[in-house]
Length: 280
Image (cartoon, rainbow, N blue to C red):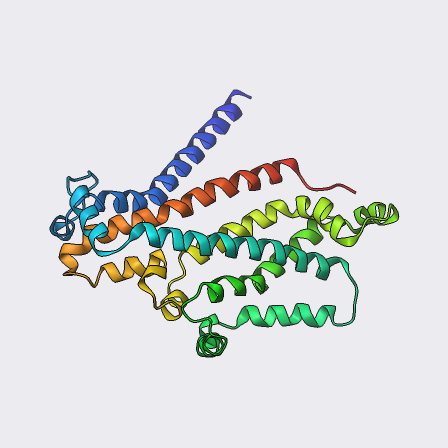
């Protein structure tokens, strides 16, 4: 019995050591980014260092004098929040309808969603730009927000998720009591789907925040540009050796909302999983 206990504690200790090592490896790139944000371009080019330097104020002066980081931050935040809200709500509503309503074309719509998931978004870039140009949406945020209403990957995930955690029988009682379908969705289905919605919301927020190609094509006004576009433009302001520390600082600042969003949504994911799903 004692030998088995020793083996158990040894295996547990090795597992904890492995997880700690894995955490350090995952955190190392973020730490390098933070350290390089405090170093000058010449120091970065000379080699690797784990200790911060003294060029943070100089790097911030380069960033603030060349790009309006605060304006880009607000622009990206507006687009990312609106896109996340739209993709979360309408994808959940669509997934609920596809999962629990039987109608002609249900399977055809589901197969169409799967097909569109396989098509790279870059293939529709020219057509998308032409459509936005004809609708006079160039240099506005609408082309960056409205397409979030239709997200095939999110609908597919939430449809599979709600089928796995929510039995059909749970919908019968409120229907007998006379509740409408929208009321059933908001009061019953939506809370049950919240862990899955939170999971997809993290990806939607990060994807919208880091989006570079479409904002670069659609937005021409410098005051409306998003943070990733401004960070990319920072590298072209001066020589890369001079600007490298400032680029790391701008990237480090742009990562902060992503980390906050993950910490916020992960709490709901963990609480939803620990609470368990609905039992029949």
